[in-house]
Picture 1 (cartoon, rainbow, N blue to C red):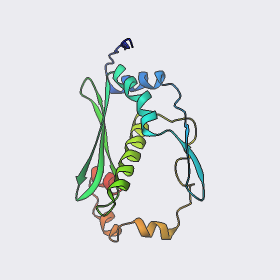
Picture 2 (cartoon, rainbow, N blue to C red):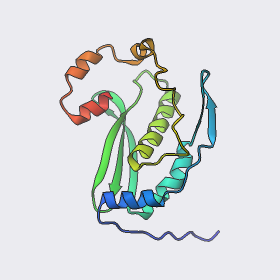
Picture 3 (cartoon, rainbow, N blue to C red):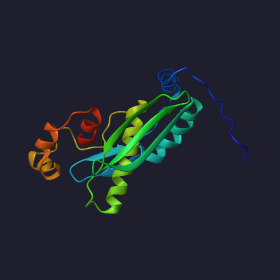
Picture 4 (cartoon, rainbow, N blue to C red):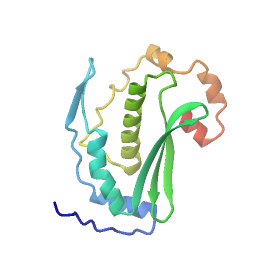
Length: 168
C-alpha cells in the first residue's frame, strides 16, 4: 500500500490552527448504538473520533495528549491540545474514585478522552449529543449516591481554577 502524503500546514497561533482545523473537519458519524435501559442512544466511539481528528490536528501543527493521573488524591485525566509554537489548552477531567473496578475505570478514561477531545477541538459527531442520560434524568438520590460526603466543605475550599475543575 503506498504511503499517504499529508501536507503539513503552519499557523501563527493555536487559535489560527484550531480555526483552520475546524474548517477542514469532515462529519464524524455516530454509527454506534447502545441501550441503557430507560433510553437508547447513538455515538461515535473514541477510535472513530481519533481516526478523523488526530491526523487532521497533526496536519495543522496541533497535537493532543491525555494522561490519567492523581490530583489532590483523586483520579483525573489531564488533557492538553498543543500548538507547534508552544501554546496549549489544557484541563482536568475528574474520574471515578479509587474503589472503582479497573475495567470500569478504563471505560471512564476512554469516555473522558473522547469527551475532552471533542470539547476542546469543537468536534460534534453527527448531530445532537445523545450519548448521555436525558437532561434532568438524574434524581437527587442519584446525585447523593455519587457526590462526596464532604462536598460542601470541598466547595468552600475552592480557591483556584484547577481546584474548581477537579471538583467539577
